[in-house]
Image (cartoon, rainbow, N blue to C red):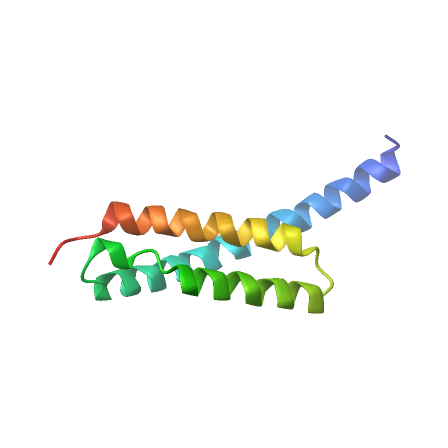
Length: 96
């Protein structure tokens, strides 16, 4: 790789690192909201709401297409995020 390309790559990676830091803050906010939702659930079987999951994924696909983002990327990200939070809720569910 030429020095010019290496320099460009380094600059882009710094931008990605900044973006990752921003995403971490957003994930923290999302986690706080999920914690509030979890406190409202009375039974463990309320953790998975398939209708809501389907609606979220449908909306993400529409928004991806509108914003010219490959929907396969966003679908995979959101599915993984949803299932990660389902796992989180199951691990942190407290019976009332």
